[in-house]
Each structure stands twice: as C-alpha cells, then as structure tokens.
Amino acid sequence: MTLTDTNSWTGIREVLLRRIHDRIWQPGEQIPHEADLAEEFGCARTTVNRALRDLADSGLVVRKRKAGTRVAVNPPQRATLTIPIIREEVESIGGSYRHSVLERDLRPLPAMLHGAFQVSLGEDVLFLKTLHFSNERPYAFEERYINLEAAPAARDLSFKEVSANEWLVHNAPYSHGDLSFFAVNADDKLSGKLDAATGTALFAMERITWAGDLPITHVRLIFAPGYRMRTEI
Image (cartoon, rainbow, N blue to C red):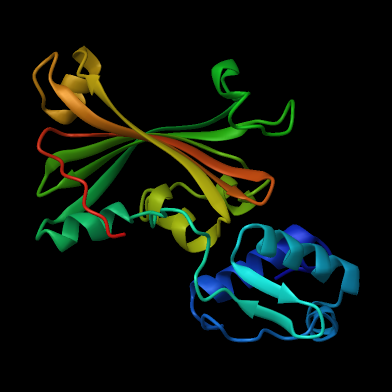
C-alpha cells in the first residue's frame, strides 16, 4: 500500500474490508484498536475512525464504547449475494472457460448512468465489452464501466489474461451494491454474440458496486439461453 493510500480513509477502509472478507479477522473477533491501526498505517487516528465508522454503517463491524470494535457475527440483516467469478462459475459445472475482450477504451460516462453511477464530473471511465465462453460456446456478454478513481490500476490492464470480473473481485473490495434482474429479447447483435435466435428471451442483470460513497463498477451481463442462476440464502 502506498503512502497516499494510507493517508486516505477510503484506502484504509479497503484494507480493513479485505481483511474481513479474507477472514484474517474472523466473525466476532475484536480488531486492533484505532491507535494501533493508526500507527500501522502511519496516519491520524481520526482517519482510522472514519474508515471504521463507514464499516459500522455497512453493518460489517460492531463498535461499542469501551469494548472496542468487532467483526459482525451476523452482517447486515438483509439478503446478500456474493459476486461470482464467471470463470469459477463455468468450471464448477464442468466447462472449459475462456473470455475475449471485444472492446476496451476510455470514455465519458453515458448520460443515462449519471444518476445511478456518480463518478467525478469530467473524468473518463474505463469501458469494456467482454464475451465469456464455456466449452467454446458463448456463456455471457458483458458491458462494464470502471471508475478509475476507485480502481486506478485498471487503467493499465488489458484484461486479456484475467477478466475484469475476476480482477475486480480480487482487487476492488466493495462495501455494498445495487443489483437488478430482468429479461431481454435478443436483437440481431445479441443473437450473434450469444448464439441465440432473434427474439429469444435472455436472462440479464445489472450491478453497481460501491466502496462507501465511491462507485467502483457498473456492469450489465446478459447470459446465453439455458443459463440458470444458483445462490444460497
């Protein structure tokens, strides 16, 4: 982690969030005191306090006066979904995975997304179109916008070896997100990409992830015919 990162409460929050997600700190475990974390990161105690308050607001930690801060045993009382890595999803059903980056460029965020995905005005985002395959057959078509303020390292990556989906799961910890599911009918472009007849109903989802107040990525995924979503509650 760079000095700039540790001078930012959002950077510290990302490190703490990663430790929680990776189970370095187990549910119910007390985490180091603010003063100890401030010494570790070389920052003001108030900066650590701001990061911990954000995690507490997200329900990931529980803070009690004189008792310290603990990882929540029962995180937020709402239904939650883990963001799947598409490669692992394909391999779990016995498929051979690969992906192809169809388009990659820097561009302004489309006006239609300004209300939902609020990036800094005038800043370009990284746009990607990716086609995911299972056993050489189309599996899912992805359109993604990445906020480079939240994931600056993405600017220099081609995502040809590791998909943006997988890279972001491992490198851009999120605190919360918005998710919607819907059906779309395959138009001429989608029918060609997903090997589906024009007009076929396809399962689709849109997802926005956030690190506190900072949007990370907006993605739209449309799956080939026959896709079935499985999850746990």
